Structure formats: C-alpha cells, structure tokens
Image (tube, rainbow, N blue to C red):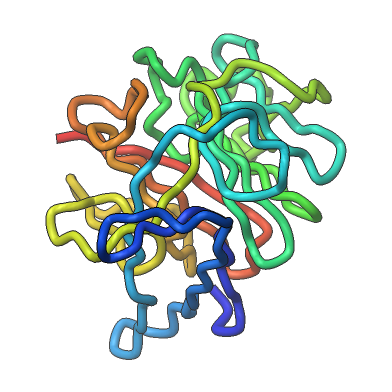
Length: 240
C-alpha cells in the first residue's frame, strides 16, 4: 500500500487497567508499502477483540454484524454458485471511506468460500472502489463463454443477511497468542496466499475469538487484503 495511506479506526479502547473509554476513540496506524523483499517494511500489528454494541450502529465506523452503512449506491454482492445475497460480515473504516466484507452463508460451509476469487466472498470499497474480479476456470468457462476474469455481481439492495447483531472492534494490548489484528504481516495457518502483487494485509479475524459463529473452517482465520491503490480488496480464509 502507498506509504502515505492511513487506516483510521473508530472503536472503544480497552485501557491498561481494564476500564473502557466512555467515548469513541480514533486509532491511527500507518500502512506501509511493500517495496522489495529486502526492503519490505510492515506496520506494527494492532490487536483487537470484538464486543456487542449497545444497539444498531448507523455511523460509518468499523464494526461487525448489523447492516452496512453505505456511502454510495448499495452494492450487495451475489453468490456466484447460488445466486443469493451474501452475508454481511463487517465494515472497516479507511482514510476516505469504508470497506465492506461479505461471504456466502457465513455461518455455514460453502464450497469456494475460502478462495479470494471463488465468487463466494467479496470485499466492496466505497467510494470509488473497484468490484473484485472472479477467477474463471474449469466448467465455469462454458457458463461465461470466456476465461477472462469478470466482476462479481451485485444488487442495489441496502440490507440483507448478516452474521450477527452489531458489534464493535475494541483495541487491546499486544497479545502474542492472538491471530486477530490489523496491519502488519499476516500470520498464516497454511502456505501464504497473498491475493495479488503489492496487496497488503488490512485485518485478520480469528474465528474462535469472535462472540458469534462464523465459518472459517476448523479454528480458521479470515484475512482481508487491500490493493496498493486502496481501491480493490480481497478476502480469504484458512483453517488448521
């Protein structure tokens, strides 16, 4: 990601003595660019937990569950294999907008849901984002008539399936046992799967640390990546 890019969070902060801040707080972290293998510099990891919100969250801040707060025309992604709206997982605050993360039937097992370009998950960016491209291979070529990548289908519906009620991301002290953080180098459960050249990690979730069910496989980790120009995102998950 560009060295000038900044990731802004709005969330509650867990203070060292365990008390919670009473007002929303901004946490600013740098997202450094990937230059070369010898010069790669990654931002410091920022660990967090996820806790229930007091009610529906309708502001453009980072959250999980509930309904997305759209900044432009709604772009609800549609499952490639099932033709149904995906489940909303989260929205994450960016310097000049939001990213929205979706997955087909997020609490159930779905083929290809772990693939960054399988058509069963999606990252939508507003404003001015690009729709994620789907991989076209095998029998899918016959359906589309070409093996050229194509954007995921979206609907203009503003609301739809969601993983849970609204939850907030709460910053916590560094935790060497946690796989749940923003920025930094990803912690992989299997072989590295960076989804594109120059893509950087925005965030990763640890399914066993979430207060609601989500299917990233057995003790799985979900990874969200952003393109160097911050206009396109990818999601994937791995399990043990």
